[in-house]
Image (cartoon, rainbow, N blue to C red; front, side):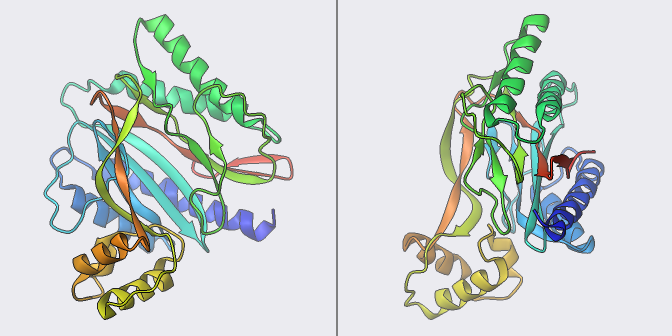
Length: 302
């Protein structure tokens, strides 16, 4: 990996670390999610980078893929996951935290377990580490915690970490949160590790659309407004995910209709919410790592 690439990953990570600090100070129970999202968007730009994807603000049993639209009245309550993506010269930092917004702090133990799982996964990451070893560290942490504390927390096994590349959030390789026997070495790579914990069964299902889109195919667009919006999307966001609130600021007419048209034609794709099947709360913590020349850098670690 070239020095320029590593430096860009580092810079994206430095901004992401500052955004986590900013988010913890910003978020209060009862705040509108749209206000949180817009504040985080603005802060990323202020710090000299850009969002790599719309910030995920997923509440309680929603594990991932929710970003608020303009006018969204949803408020922050319960257990909030804040999944942040930062891009610098198209190189990405992907990181997440969970915040307990309950008065009695009933999610503190699950959050502590989730942090411990990410910490222990981090401790095994080294040059040529096998993908499966990371999953073993997470799974062992969970099982030991449950044994020692008489708890019954579960992993969300259907959600995994992933490799990163320039302009790509999911670059092909998945990083499991459990033992799966994968002996692929992680040499000269960038990747995110993100264990999810729950008090439920650990299965997830796809819900309604969550407001996060990505371009999926070229396609021919007949509608002029949709064609103009697609041109803007490709020029502005390229291969990275985007959301409607970012495009609204440009004053396009018939935005909702055009996005719906593009989605129906399969040109853009809207990610569905990922929801814990037993409707139990889910927590998440995530960091980005770069391995180069035998060295490991956690770009988003605090």
